[in-house]
Image (cartoon, rainbow, N blue to C red; front, side, top):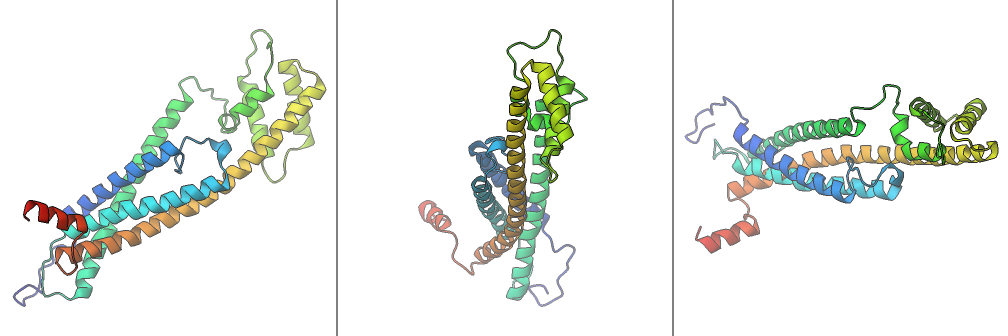
Length: 279
């Protein structure tokens, strides 16, 4: 219905200007908070601490930070979307007004999630390609970069044989360590083969090679299990944060709509600014 009692012409109930403005604000705040989280190690995408520090405490702290990030960023974006949306029909019921305001907040949330996800995916892919470097060996596997330090310990020697190329050997050892982290553990054949690799490439005696292999297998297996548990916790935290962000965007958009219509008092800082500058 229009203001004069006629039927409201609904070419589009979604005001894309308000939605996009809210989405951009939400994405900007989210990226700022995620960047801050990366810098202090409280982020899913954090490069510090490393995978070796993937403790349950760190996973829980990162999950809580994700929830706070979602509340703040999507709440601010939803409020902007609801506050900027124009009312077409002043006589519309409160339920209709609240639904349209909330819908604008949720649509802004959806656009912000997609946009932020694309930015993070592109950034992660760029960092991964730079980390791999142009000289990455095609024989390398995912296990080698994960166990890089353990492989260094495994093949550490005062003097390697002349013209020795450990690229394939390290990759093969990384695959064995990755397989050892599974439920079946490492087979006796793989352990014996790994011991022979260490002997042949470092020149250490058999007892020392066995000690190195056992130590590295234990450390790598424990670290991978911790990383897997942390990944599960962070995965659930991310999903919960996104759902909480949708609810926050809906609620904040409704609050913004009430402030727009002067149904509820505006924010404190808004009152102060009007009082200080004469409206």
